[in-house]
Length: 383
Ligand code: ADP
Picture (spheres, rainbow, N blue to C red):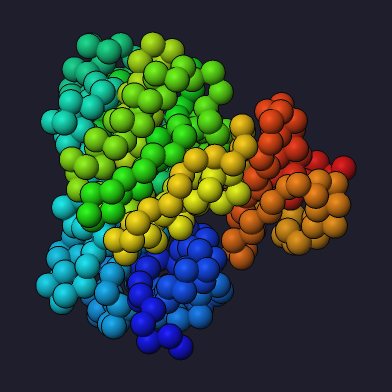
């Protein structure tokens, strides 16, 4: 083992940590991952595994022991644990004061509003009257969200009237969570603007992409967002760079945006590599995973520019077929230009189990190829 290699701990054993293994290997960075089980996605790809939970301070101290820096596969580590890690001398990146804003949607909306970032109109809903008050300003429907614990659209409801709102508010909330009521934006497309920022303050911006969600889950991503005017794309990049600087983010930041045809509104922030940036593995000169590693280790950042006019990424969602590898012969033979990433996860209906990426000039062709492969993997088509 190279005793001079930087040592980086990653909390969380999902696919984001797993996809960090390849650039870490190339750069000679030693990764250690905190996973809940030896067969979790990242634990299959990173040999140095500590088993434990992200909310257990002993497990967090064990995974960071001997590591200079700790980063994350998700945003759920309790803030007091992050502070304890800092007190133990580990550089926490992104740090607790930045992550605070990605851990709770009410904190995030408040910080974004304070910074003058365009948001849907919103308020904390302590009762039905608060939701009705917002609806008087914005009209129905209104979006209700749990401030914490939601992901992939779980924890988000669009309510058409007060009765529906009442039924949603009657559900129990998780620890520390509140209800957030938001204006429903009638968007023409959803966008994501990703930047990497290092503790020294260097930052790079990736092309702004279009994301398509189905049932609250990201289904596909097109880079760059087709038809987005250059000045609006630049405005989104500038906003993401400004937010990364103002919030003190280190590592990757994804700013999810709604485009209603006239204006952009921030939906939410993710302070880690993000599904909207998987295309960068093949589609950009430096992937989001490599730039996240470089950024959290305070190394100079890599070139974020695309390598082709378009990249299309389509998620593989679990369907009826349990054996994803059974699809390889057909998918790989049919399209030698297609790149496949499987996450080593057991197939469950609707679960993100992998993705495919194609890059090139002809967007319609790329979309058709990417969708075909993802549908074949999930069993939606068989030829
Ligand atoms: P999660 O954190 O679970 O991903 P989000 O807050 O990103 O949840 O919401 C999931 C999806 O719900 C969004 O991608 C968007 O399609 C829809 N959505 C969320 N908030 C709004 C809103 N204010 N207006 C319109 N659609 C919304």
